[in-house]
Image 1 (cartoon, one colour):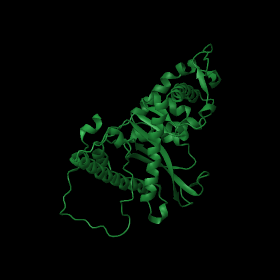
Image 2 (cartoon, one colour):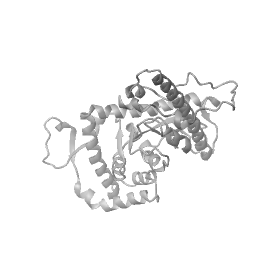
Image 3 (cartoon, helix red, strand yellow):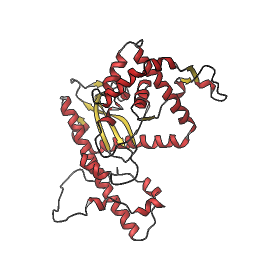
Image 4 (cartoon, one colour):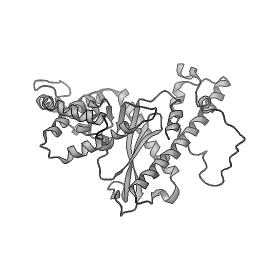
Length: 329
């Protein structure tokens, strides 16, 4: 898997963002991961994917249906050891919460979710006397800077433990959320998170380009889900193992197959572009941005697969590269 990502990394120019989102997989009712999903119906688990803005999956974690997905959104970035190392993670409403905003900020990760009903969230003023002429109704409180300052070193110790690999963000966030809401460290994380979220939302509502970028990246992970649905046709797309380790393996193998197909599609598209440019056709980077490595109409899922070992393909290093003039126009 890492080798495929390494080769795929040579193509394209985007690599700084990753989208995180969950997709329900059907599993048997009587096992440790199985829960009833209210929105999708039926028993199953959630495959929580981290997909690069270069379309390839970097990490997948199998979680229960009832968990708030934001708890695991930072794990995928920290466990990712591939050549693609994004510093920004996009998600949906389930991909954010006040403590997650705080923790991502302290870890140097930019959290950019697409939040439903953002107007219902609390915007905080920096001081009580701060007034804003046109957006005053959005603000519903003032930052408790004393709380953040008091527990700043405690929060930094938590971050250093995560950086040192002593604890994963999901473990910490689960423990924080299970504590009483009167826990001062939990309150400090929430307060800092509200500050970071307020700054993000103010930029989000005023920057159309930013909204479009977030929407484009989150659409990629949704398209990846549809791509996996097409690939995983055996046993009607159900994971039939009850062992959590085997369930996780199924998803890893599925990602491996998907990554292999994505790489082959990318090679085929790159070779077609090389042929067109050699003929004198003008192709610019906007044309490339409209392409996706998720087409399936040309792929054969059933029947005989004939491999000609005497037909040596072009080296991937040259096959996957696009003419440099494309990115200059």
